[in-house]
Image (tube, rainbow, N blue to C red; front, side, top):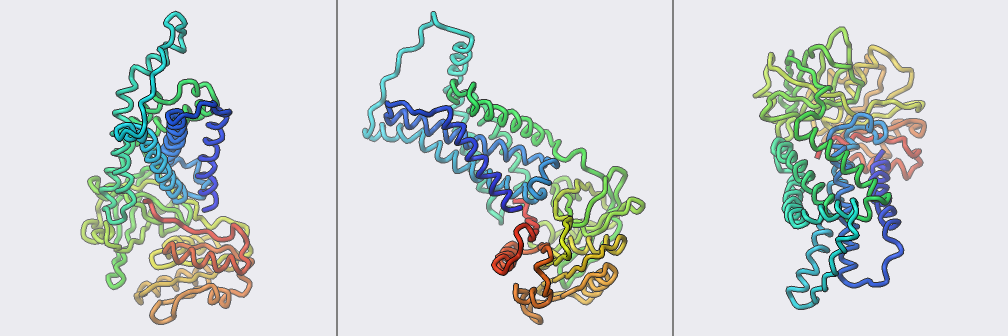
Length: 449
């Protein structure tokens, strides 16, 4: 599914590039500095606003796109790279637009002569629209530059991992405002003759979809129909592992979930929603849902203190495509640290509805409390899963060789990984070099930034 993210990103850029070339080729013979500047400004503008528009569409969490991208976690990864791509294109656009002005101020370039205005007697409805848009040109340029600076700052903050998630979530909303300003900037300043070309039509559709998405974001309508209220019913803290199990009884409205999916949970409106992997199987007769969280230096550190039994919560979801659905003869699961969570949910589901396929679960962790080991072992036995626990300081680290030794017929299995990204990438590359079929490795990219 990572390949789908790359194909989607480069496919968008390549597609817009092809449409732009179709509109502008063959190029005029008079390729002066200003002509080249205008061409590059139009091109970088189309790529930048196109990437930002798709990123804005993904921001509303469209469920219909999840199967195509492999889950919301993959959608968010694409959203991130579209934002970065849009930022790069916008920076290039800013340099191209201002470069000639800087060169003129240094005396390196002579200001071009302005052409004569069009004959008023030849005015048409289309010419009138063009003229009207030109009347907003100066405003669009000024607002567009300010929106560019705001977008640069907000995207930079989004990429800084130490910037608190709650502040990131709140400041990130302002990108929708900056985007709407850039839509106005694009409508006014895009070469008017291209609006009737395929590149203009596609850009227009992206702008319309992105604008509607931005409005949904700003009016806080995202995921509204997928939200259900609930009450914290039980909490169990494993202090020596800094892990907290929270069980919420849900009110009516939850559509159910599959093992391995996640949800956004709000315990405090001022803090906002945080994504957590679901660690329980679904039973409509007993509408409870459990989350296992580990204190990682952010909001999760404060959950034991601020979330008590009886507290109200809002759960939005479910999301994600890490659902163990495939046709392989067997499965291999790898849960690194708190990445064990989706596998706990799956084992609880298998205990209720068994699957004949053999499953091997490798749980690697720096430390495992006796209580946690006991629960994990019981879940594995009830689900018929072969459990391999590897505590770093005692058992060493999981490698491709150790996995292949433990599961000799591993090539007939699909591999499901949840844990540190670098660890997953290393295992995937190792197995790929030894003959793992393409598409057999499934990795949860549980990172919303």
